[in-house]
Every structure is written in structure tokens, then in C-alpha cells.
Length: 638
Image 1 (cartoon, rainbow, N blue to C red):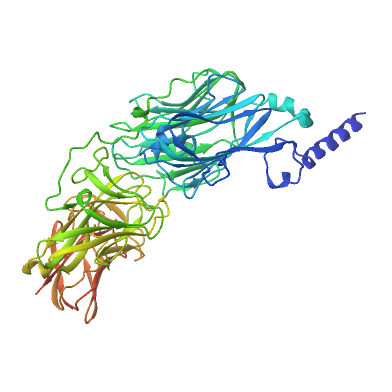
Image 2: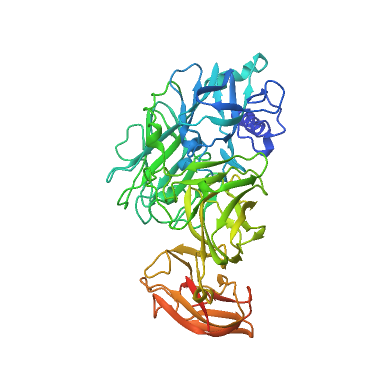
């Protein structure tokens, strides 16, 4: 009898592998199993049959979906066109299961999809993926017995221009009634946004506090640094069912999020990642995630998930979304922080500043612009960084080739060194500047930045111009892979007429990335003592794979004395044998320079002959015994 029982059990177990449960993970081997549901979708398609497949002018609360069960949501896709900064933090997503009054999901839209700080960036994981461009996807399995309701609330100042969405779900009708007990017994999906801006010294940050029976399946955590340094030393702690000492006690924040050693480059994977990797500098933005899909953490009465906020003085700003399943009813969430308290830390309204002698973008006469694109003047006093005149001329470009052309009036003929001051943001283009249809910048200008910042001075180049009217065109030629559009923002321009003595003196700073400075390989931008200008490019010692080129546009042929500038060696890690190559009219010369000596001054390299135009350069590489600096080079005509 025992033998028969054991044999029968063996057959049952083997059949279970051949016929996976309907609700098992959908791995490849489960695809041939016939499905016991009907596929449905709620979307923003145009009810009139045209191509306006979106909600327009969204303000206040709108209901995206009301679905009758039993069923399960399997995929949500959004894409949003909004003119408002931080709209991902100002739009709030809520979900209600089976007629409940208190939402089981409540989060700013961006944070729900793992996009912290109201910013867009790309990554992919098992439950979330952000596709190019601005395609927000969610694949959590969300069952319900009687009903599901999803709403969107715009708490911003501007209406959303267009909101596109899919909500894909399974419906289980009477034909599949044998599955209903399994659906009814499932935990319901929950997601809750939390924040502390800033965290409290000596107090752990709480990612989740919930009561009932269920299991925790992960979180994303966004950090804005309150001081220079590393934020990730805090241990993770899981208190299960009322514990006073955590069952799960970690060793550090980067360890819980499955990275190590303060992280290298940004990365993303199925269950963990750091898709937004800032610098170790005050104000920088980070985002990390960890999804317990292979290793859920169950609780029968309660759970609290904490993480220490250590070695932060001043403290950082933390915000997070926790994801879990539990039996309803759940304890109602605390009120969502007001919208103004959810926004990333930026300066208050900035005082209006003026760049002396500049032609303000907002005052420029617009001659023409690309068809279908809006051009207007934008108030920039709410952004940190300071825009001259407090405003910019803004092209709402959408495609490569979009442009805006303006008119300027020069008081006299001469050779001018031209400076540009622009806006950088998450949806801005790589662009060129043309004067009278001639490109002035040697290298394209990348307008992309995760946040909205001022570019600072960008030296575009030198050119001879006549007195009177000229056309200046700003044209999108490409976009950064991380940028979501092709916008261009012009703060102001300066036309500096060069005197005779200035014509033979050329200084190239590491900031002159549009005119004369470019890099190859891995370079960092930092600041130390005695930098020329505001910062410096530096590369770790290597084998010459990192190179920086200073390439002037020589106004005349002749002999030029060459000087190099580099800052002080406060960390004692600068190279003593940094290699230089001077490419000139008679060939190439090689030199080495000790970056530990004669810091904070012009150091003479030698005299070389150069032909008119971009005929030569000075190159420095990291094939050295220490870190190498690329700061500034000066050429003086004899």
C-alpha cells in the first residue's frame, strides 16, 4: 500500500511539472499551456476614430479605468506630454481594488515607475521598463475579484497637453469559474510613496510600514545629496510581525540594492540596479531599486522596512516607493505630502542677474523657426543657476533639423569672439549655432542634462563680421541618447570684439567644448585649488586611452609660444610625467610635465610654428604615473 501511495505521488508531482499552474510565472516553457482568461484593454484611443489617441488638457482628477472583475491587470503603459517641470512628481496615480475607498496604490507617477526626482531616464527591470522616449511600462500582476479602478490626479499648475495610456488586463468569466477561488485568495497589489526631505539624524528612514498578512516584493529609493560624500553606508532592517530586532539585518545601502563599493557606472538589471548615478557632490541625484521577485519577504501580522541614513551632514533627501501584496483590507496610508513638498530641492525664486554686454535671448527678433514648433519666452527665475535677464528664448523642438533664427545688430566691423549662454535640460537637443549660414562652433553643443541647469559660458569661436544686421540660427542636429526631445533654450549671447593685441593670444579652457576642447576616453569634471576658470577635466592614470585635445583656430600663420595651466595637487595624486604631444606645422614634439610643481600658473612648453586655421593642437593623455589634468592651454603669437 505504501508503494502504491508513493508511486501515485510520484506521478502527480511529475504531472505538475508538465502542466504548470495557471498563475505560475510565465517562463518560456509555460507559453504552450492554453490560457484560461480573456484578454482586454482600456486605453486612450480616439473615440471619434481619428488620431487624437490621448487625454488632452488633463487638470484635476480623471478616471483612467473602471474594470469589472474577476480579473488581473498585467501591463500598464503611459507616455506624457507636459510643459511643466517635475510633472512626474506632480501627477499622482491611485488604484482601488474591489470597491475599496482607500487606495492600495498611491504614488506620484514617476516614482511609481521607478523614475525618481521627477526626472526621466532609461532602464529596464522585470516589473518596470522605461522605453525610449518617455515610454513608462509596468508589468506587476494585479488581481481583483469584483472591480479595479485607476485614477490620475494633476496637482501641477499646467494642464497636461496629452496623456496616452494602455491598461491591459485579463478577465475570468463563467467559463473559467474553476479559477475564481484562486483569484479570490490572492493578495492584492500595493504601492506606497514615502519621503523624508531631509532625513533625520540618528533616525532610520522607513520604506514601508504595513499591517496584515502578505509579502514585500521590493522598492525603489531616490536620494538627493545634502552634502558632498557617500550616502550608502546605512544598513537595511526588516522587522517582521512585531519584532524588536530585525530578522533581516543588512550591511549597507549599496549592498541591499545589490551593488558594491559606492557603485561604478549606472546600471540596471532584472531585479536590482542604479539607473540614476549621480556624483558624490551636494545636490546630486541618485536612484536605486531592488525587487524581491525571486525572494519575497512574507509577513503574517506586520512588516517594517527601514534603512539607516548614516554619515550625512547635512542630511540627504530620501523618497521611495514600496511594493507588496497583502490580504485586504489594508491600513489606510498617511496623507500624501503636498505637491510643493515633494519636489526636488532647488533654489527659491532666483534674483534676476545680468551678463554685462550680452544680447538677451528674450529680446532677440525672431525671423523664422521650424514649422509646427512653438517659440516663446520662458521665465527662468524659478530654476537654480541664474539666467541673464531672468528669462530665455525657447524653441519647443521635436525633431532633428528643428531651428530658430534670430536677428542681431553689431555696432562695428571686427573680429569677434562669440560666447553663448544656453539652457540644459532632460528634453533638450544637441545643436549648432550658425551666423549668416556659417557654423561658428567647431563641435556640437549638447543641451541635455538630467535637471534644468544653466550652461554657463560656452565659447563658440571667433569670426570676422561686418557692421550691421546678421542672422543667427540655432539648429537641432541630434539628441543625447538620454534626452527625450529636441528643445533649445537661448539665454543670451556675447560678441566680444577683439583688439589687435588679443588677436595673437588664444586661451582654451576645458569648458570650451563647443569651440576648441574635446576628449576621448574616460574623463571626470571636478574642481580643486587654483583651477583655470571654474573647473577642470581629470583622468585617472592609465595607458593613454584617455586623451584631451586643445585645438585653436589660429587667426594667422606664424610662431606661437605655448603655455599650459593646471591646479594644485591637494590629494597628492597628480602625475609627475604627464605626456604632451604638440602637433605643429613641422611635425610633432613630445614633452612631459610634472603636475605636482608650479601649480596655479602658466607654464611655458615651447615655441612652435602653426598654420592659419585649425592646423595644430596640444594633446595630453593619461599614460602617466598619476592622475592627469586637462585645464587650459594658451597660445601667444610672437
